[in-house]
Length: 99
Image 1 (cartoon, rainbow, N blue to C red):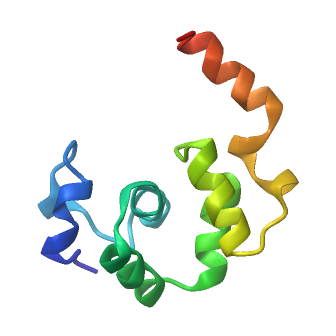
Image 2: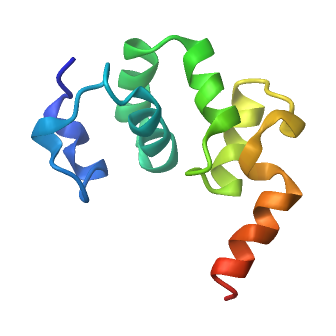
């Protein structure tokens, strides 16, 4: 599935014309959840099932803790099930970037 052109601004670091939602759903979902505006989020929820979005929130390590916390509340996901909110991951982040 080709991506709508209005989403291009969220994928500044990749070749947007080569993105396909069916081939990279986790990457695209995480990027939109992290940076997307209301229009992008609406598109995402129309293009994907809520359960698939929940899986991305739980497994993705690309989400910031602030974003993951928001989506855990919005999608009613237990915080203990979200990888990027686990203490071991947060310690690992600080060891790579101590500032």
